[in-house]
Length: 297
Ligand code: ADP
Ligand code: ZN
Image (tube, rainbow, N blue to C red; front, side):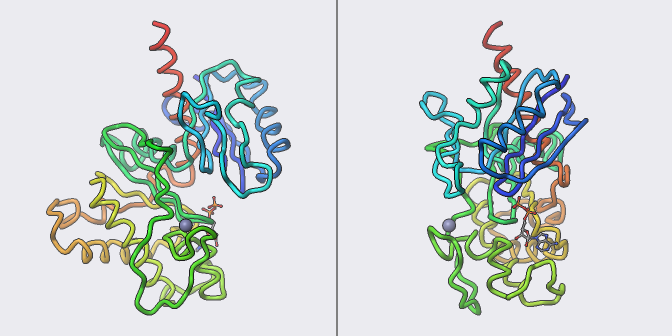
Protein backbone atom coordinates (compact mmCIF):
# COMPACT_ATOMS: atom_id res chain seq x y z
CA UNK A 1 0.00 0.00 0.00
CA UNK A 2 1.25 3.48 -0.84
CA UNK A 3 0.09 6.27 1.45
CA UNK A 4 1.14 9.82 0.63
CA UNK A 5 2.26 11.86 3.64
CA UNK A 6 2.88 15.57 4.12
CA UNK A 7 4.47 17.11 7.17
CA UNK A 8 3.61 20.74 6.51
CA UNK A 9 5.89 22.82 8.74
CA UNK A 10 6.25 26.57 8.91
CA UNK A 11 9.93 26.24 7.99
CA UNK A 12 9.95 23.19 5.74
CA UNK A 13 7.62 20.79 3.98
CA UNK A 14 8.38 17.07 4.04
CA UNK A 15 6.54 14.84 1.58
CA UNK A 16 6.85 11.07 1.53
CA UNK A 17 5.37 7.70 0.79
CA UNK A 18 4.72 5.19 3.55
CA UNK A 19 3.10 1.80 3.84
CA UNK A 20 0.47 0.37 6.19
CA UNK A 21 3.17 -0.43 8.74
CA UNK A 22 4.40 3.14 8.87
CA UNK A 23 7.58 2.33 6.96
CA UNK A 24 8.70 5.34 4.94
CA UNK A 25 9.77 4.29 1.43
CA UNK A 26 10.62 7.65 -0.02
CA UNK A 27 10.77 11.27 1.12
CA UNK A 28 11.72 14.74 -0.03
CA UNK A 29 11.94 18.02 1.81
CA UNK A 30 11.82 21.61 0.63
CA UNK A 31 11.53 25.04 2.30
CA UNK A 32 8.07 26.44 3.02
CA UNK A 33 7.71 29.39 0.65
CA UNK A 34 4.57 31.02 -0.76
CA UNK A 35 1.79 28.38 -0.81
CA UNK A 36 1.32 28.64 -4.58
CA UNK A 37 4.85 27.40 -5.03
CA UNK A 38 5.09 25.01 -2.09
CA UNK A 39 1.76 23.24 -2.62
CA UNK A 40 2.58 22.90 -6.33
CA UNK A 41 5.83 21.15 -5.39
CA UNK A 42 3.88 18.78 -3.13
CA UNK A 43 1.35 18.05 -5.89
CA UNK A 44 4.17 17.44 -8.38
CA UNK A 45 5.84 15.02 -5.97
CA UNK A 46 2.74 12.84 -5.61
CA UNK A 47 1.66 13.02 -9.26
CA UNK A 48 3.11 9.71 -10.44
CA UNK A 49 3.31 7.95 -7.09
CA UNK A 50 -0.02 6.05 -7.26
CA UNK A 51 -1.07 6.89 -3.71
CA UNK A 52 -4.27 5.35 -2.32
CA UNK A 53 -4.71 8.02 0.37
CA UNK A 54 -2.93 11.12 1.63
CA UNK A 55 -2.36 12.29 5.19
CA UNK A 56 -1.42 15.86 6.04
CA UNK A 57 -0.11 17.02 9.42
CA UNK A 58 0.08 20.79 9.27
CA UNK A 59 1.28 23.80 11.19
CA UNK A 60 -1.69 25.82 12.30
CA UNK A 61 -4.06 26.98 13.41
CA UNK A 62 -6.12 24.88 10.99
CA UNK A 63 -9.81 24.24 10.37
CA UNK A 64 -10.77 20.66 11.31
CA UNK A 65 -14.55 21.05 11.47
CA UNK A 66 -15.93 18.73 8.82
CA UNK A 67 -19.07 20.88 8.31
CA UNK A 68 -17.14 24.13 7.90
CA UNK A 69 -16.81 25.84 4.50
CA UNK A 70 -13.14 26.34 5.31
CA UNK A 71 -12.44 22.72 6.39
CA UNK A 72 -8.91 21.84 5.34
CA UNK A 73 -7.66 25.42 5.49
CA UNK A 74 -4.79 26.87 7.46
CA UNK A 75 -6.63 29.75 9.12
CA UNK A 76 -5.06 32.67 10.96
CA UNK A 77 -1.30 32.25 10.63
CA UNK A 78 0.73 35.44 10.19
CA UNK A 79 2.99 33.50 7.78
CA UNK A 80 2.78 35.41 4.45
CA UNK A 81 0.34 33.84 1.98
CA UNK A 82 -0.70 30.98 4.28
CA UNK A 83 -3.54 32.69 6.13
CA UNK A 84 -6.86 31.30 4.85
CA UNK A 85 -5.05 28.81 2.60
CA UNK A 86 -6.98 25.79 1.30
CA UNK A 87 -4.42 23.01 1.72
CA UNK A 88 -6.71 19.96 1.58
CA UNK A 89 -8.72 21.41 -1.35
CA UNK A 90 -5.55 21.96 -3.37
CA UNK A 91 -4.55 18.31 -2.96
CA UNK A 92 -8.11 17.06 -3.46
CA UNK A 93 -8.39 18.80 -6.85
CA UNK A 94 -5.46 16.71 -8.07
CA UNK A 95 -5.89 13.42 -6.21
CA UNK A 96 -9.36 11.81 -5.85
CA UNK A 97 -8.34 9.75 -2.81
CA UNK A 98 -9.25 9.95 0.91
CA UNK A 99 -7.30 12.74 2.61
CA UNK A 100 -6.58 12.83 6.35
CA UNK A 101 -5.95 16.21 7.94
CA UNK A 102 -4.84 17.32 11.39
CA UNK A 103 -2.25 19.44 13.17
CA UNK A 104 1.39 18.38 12.82
CA UNK A 105 1.51 17.52 16.52
CA UNK A 106 -1.74 15.53 16.59
CA UNK A 107 -0.36 13.63 13.58
CA UNK A 108 2.93 12.94 15.37
CA UNK A 109 1.04 11.81 18.48
CA UNK A 110 -0.99 9.41 16.34
CA UNK A 111 2.15 8.07 14.65
CA UNK A 112 3.76 7.48 18.05
CA UNK A 113 0.63 5.71 19.31
CA UNK A 114 0.51 3.44 16.27
CA UNK A 115 4.17 2.68 15.70
CA UNK A 116 6.33 4.54 18.21
CA UNK A 117 6.84 5.17 21.92
CA UNK A 118 3.13 4.90 22.82
CA UNK A 119 2.44 1.67 20.92
CA UNK A 120 -0.20 -0.48 22.60
CA UNK A 121 -1.52 2.45 24.68
CA UNK A 122 -4.66 4.48 24.09
CA UNK A 123 -3.45 7.91 25.13
CA UNK A 124 -0.39 10.08 24.83
CA UNK A 125 0.71 13.66 24.62
CA UNK A 126 3.31 14.73 22.07
CA UNK A 127 5.29 17.93 22.52
CA UNK A 128 7.44 19.52 19.87
CA UNK A 129 9.85 22.13 21.18
CA UNK A 130 11.39 23.77 18.16
CA UNK A 131 10.77 27.08 16.37
CA UNK A 132 7.50 27.06 18.28
CA UNK A 133 5.99 24.77 20.88
CA UNK A 134 3.13 22.49 19.84
CA UNK A 135 1.25 19.86 21.79
CA UNK A 136 -0.69 16.97 20.21
CA UNK A 137 -3.05 14.85 22.21
CA UNK A 138 -4.59 11.41 21.85
CA UNK A 139 -7.26 10.35 24.33
CA UNK A 140 -9.11 7.03 24.26
CA UNK A 141 -7.41 6.24 20.96
CA UNK A 142 -8.67 9.40 19.26
CA UNK A 143 -6.97 12.60 18.23
CA UNK A 144 -8.39 15.33 20.42
CA UNK A 145 -10.34 18.08 18.63
CA UNK A 146 -12.91 20.47 20.02
CA UNK A 147 -13.75 24.06 19.43
CA UNK A 148 -10.82 23.86 17.01
CA UNK A 149 -7.84 21.87 18.26
CA UNK A 150 -5.70 22.08 21.37
CA UNK A 151 -3.12 24.88 21.21
CA UNK A 152 -1.14 23.78 24.22
CA UNK A 153 2.02 25.60 23.15
CA UNK A 154 0.38 28.81 24.33
CA UNK A 155 -0.61 27.82 27.85
CA UNK A 156 0.50 29.99 30.75
CA UNK A 157 2.99 28.60 33.23
CA UNK A 158 4.44 29.92 36.46
CA UNK A 159 7.43 32.13 35.85
CA UNK A 160 10.90 30.98 36.85
CA UNK A 161 11.86 33.16 39.86
CA UNK A 162 15.20 34.19 38.28
CA UNK A 163 13.84 34.91 34.80
CA UNK A 164 13.33 38.57 33.85
CA UNK A 165 12.79 37.70 30.16
CA UNK A 166 9.52 39.11 28.79
CA UNK A 167 8.92 36.27 26.30
CA UNK A 168 8.48 36.45 22.57
CA UNK A 169 5.01 35.18 21.73
CA UNK A 170 3.39 37.94 19.62
CA UNK A 171 0.02 37.10 21.20
CA UNK A 172 0.85 36.42 24.86
CA UNK A 173 4.45 37.37 25.57
CA UNK A 174 5.38 34.89 28.27
CA UNK A 175 3.27 31.83 27.41
CA UNK A 176 5.05 28.46 27.16
CA UNK A 177 6.12 29.04 23.55
CA UNK A 178 7.15 32.60 24.35
CA UNK A 179 9.47 31.34 27.10
CA UNK A 180 10.66 27.91 25.97
CA UNK A 181 10.76 27.65 22.15
CA UNK A 182 14.17 27.61 20.46
CA UNK A 183 14.04 31.32 19.49
CA UNK A 184 13.19 32.26 23.11
CA UNK A 185 16.31 30.45 24.34
CA UNK A 186 18.36 32.29 21.73
CA UNK A 187 16.81 35.69 22.56
CA UNK A 188 17.20 35.24 26.33
CA UNK A 189 20.80 34.04 26.33
CA UNK A 190 22.11 35.70 23.15
CA UNK A 191 23.19 32.40 21.65
CA UNK A 192 21.49 29.52 19.88
CA UNK A 193 20.65 26.62 22.17
CA UNK A 194 22.84 24.29 20.15
CA UNK A 195 25.86 26.39 21.21
CA UNK A 196 25.16 26.40 24.96
CA UNK A 197 27.12 24.02 27.21
CA UNK A 198 25.20 21.33 29.06
CA UNK A 199 25.85 23.04 32.41
CA UNK A 200 24.63 26.44 31.18
CA UNK A 201 21.81 27.86 33.37
CA UNK A 202 19.62 28.01 30.24
CA UNK A 203 18.84 24.32 30.62
CA UNK A 204 17.63 24.47 34.22
CA UNK A 205 15.32 27.26 33.14
CA UNK A 206 14.21 25.40 30.02
CA UNK A 207 13.43 22.25 32.00
CA UNK A 208 11.55 24.37 34.56
CA UNK A 209 9.14 25.70 31.90
CA UNK A 210 8.69 22.37 30.14
CA UNK A 211 8.09 20.60 33.45
CA UNK A 212 5.46 23.19 34.34
CA UNK A 213 3.56 22.41 31.14
CA UNK A 214 4.05 18.65 31.36
CA UNK A 215 2.83 18.63 34.96
CA UNK A 216 -0.33 20.39 33.76
CA UNK A 217 -0.70 17.92 30.87
CA UNK A 218 -0.49 15.00 33.29
CA UNK A 219 -3.02 16.54 35.67
CA UNK A 220 -5.41 17.60 32.91
CA UNK A 221 -5.34 14.59 30.59
CA UNK A 222 -3.69 11.73 32.42
CA UNK A 223 -1.74 10.60 29.32
CA UNK A 224 -0.14 7.15 29.43
CA UNK A 225 3.01 8.51 27.76
CA UNK A 226 4.63 11.92 27.42
CA UNK A 227 6.72 12.24 24.27
CA UNK A 228 9.06 15.18 23.71
CA UNK A 229 10.44 15.96 20.24
CA UNK A 230 11.65 18.94 18.20
CA UNK A 231 15.04 20.56 17.74
CA UNK A 232 15.48 21.75 21.33
CA UNK A 233 15.01 18.21 22.67
CA UNK A 234 18.12 17.14 20.83
CA UNK A 235 19.68 18.36 24.07
CA UNK A 236 19.21 14.90 25.58
CA UNK A 237 20.40 16.03 29.02
CA UNK A 238 17.09 17.92 29.32
CA UNK A 239 15.20 14.64 29.77
CA UNK A 240 16.48 13.75 33.26
CA UNK A 241 16.15 17.38 34.34
CA UNK A 242 12.54 17.56 33.16
CA UNK A 243 11.65 14.18 34.70
CA UNK A 244 13.05 15.19 38.05
CA UNK A 245 11.14 18.45 38.08
CA UNK A 246 7.86 16.84 37.04
CA UNK A 247 8.20 14.32 39.88
CA UNK A 248 8.94 17.17 42.25
CA UNK A 249 5.97 19.23 40.98
CA UNK A 250 3.57 16.33 41.39
CA UNK A 251 4.98 15.60 44.84
CA UNK A 252 3.50 12.11 45.12
CA UNK A 253 -0.04 13.24 44.31
CA UNK A 254 -0.38 11.20 41.11
CA UNK A 255 0.35 7.83 42.59
CA UNK A 256 1.15 5.78 39.48
CA UNK A 257 4.23 3.59 39.11
CA UNK A 258 4.92 5.23 35.72
CA UNK A 259 5.69 8.41 37.66
CA UNK A 260 6.92 7.22 41.04
CA UNK A 261 9.12 4.35 39.73
CA UNK A 262 9.52 4.45 35.94
CA UNK A 263 9.54 8.11 34.99
CA UNK A 264 12.43 7.43 32.60
CA UNK A 265 10.07 5.28 30.53
CA UNK A 266 7.17 7.70 30.89
CA UNK A 267 8.68 10.98 29.65
CA UNK A 268 10.57 9.91 26.55
CA UNK A 269 11.86 10.99 23.12
CA UNK A 270 9.83 9.98 20.05
CA UNK A 271 10.13 6.26 19.30
CA UNK A 272 10.02 7.21 15.61
CA UNK A 273 12.79 9.79 16.03
CA UNK A 274 12.83 12.45 13.34
CA UNK A 275 10.23 10.49 11.36
CA UNK A 276 7.44 11.00 13.93
CA UNK A 277 5.76 13.77 11.92
CA UNK A 278 5.92 12.02 8.57
CA UNK A 279 4.87 8.62 10.00
CA UNK A 280 2.03 10.45 11.74
CA UNK A 281 0.89 11.83 8.39
CA UNK A 282 0.95 8.28 6.99
CA UNK A 283 -1.22 7.21 9.94
CA UNK A 284 -3.65 10.05 9.14
CA UNK A 285 -3.85 8.89 5.52
CA UNK A 286 -4.49 5.32 6.65
CA UNK A 287 -7.27 6.45 9.00
CA UNK A 288 -8.90 8.44 6.20
CA UNK A 289 -8.75 5.38 3.96
CA UNK A 290 -10.30 3.15 6.62
CA UNK A 291 -13.10 5.67 7.27
CA UNK A 292 -13.92 5.99 3.60
CA UNK A 293 -13.98 2.18 3.22
CA UNK A 294 -16.27 1.90 6.26
CA UNK A 295 -18.63 4.57 4.94
CA UNK A 296 -19.13 2.87 1.54
CA UNK A 297 -19.47 -0.70 2.88
P1 ADP B 1 10.77 23.42 13.39
O1 ADP B 1 10.22 23.69 14.75
O2 ADP B 1 10.95 24.67 12.60
O3 ADP B 1 10.04 22.35 12.66
P2 ADP B 1 13.03 22.19 14.77
O4 ADP B 1 12.18 21.24 15.52
O5 ADP B 1 14.32 21.67 14.21
O6 ADP B 1 12.26 22.84 13.55
O7 ADP B 1 13.33 23.39 15.74
C1 ADP B 1 14.19 24.43 15.39
C2 ADP B 1 14.55 25.18 16.67
O8 ADP B 1 15.23 24.27 17.54
C3 ADP B 1 15.45 26.35 16.47
O9 ADP B 1 15.03 27.44 17.29
C4 ADP B 1 16.82 25.87 16.93
O10 ADP B 1 17.55 26.91 17.54
C5 ADP B 1 16.47 24.81 17.94
N1 ADP B 1 17.46 23.72 17.90
C6 ADP B 1 17.76 22.92 16.85
N2 ADP B 1 18.73 22.05 17.17
C7 ADP B 1 19.05 22.30 18.46
C8 ADP B 1 19.99 21.73 19.38
N3 ADP B 1 20.79 20.73 19.03
N4 ADP B 1 20.04 22.26 20.62
C9 ADP B 1 19.23 23.26 21.00
N5 ADP B 1 18.35 23.85 20.18
C10 ADP B 1 18.25 23.38 18.93
ZN1 ZN C 1 1.49 32.42 23.01
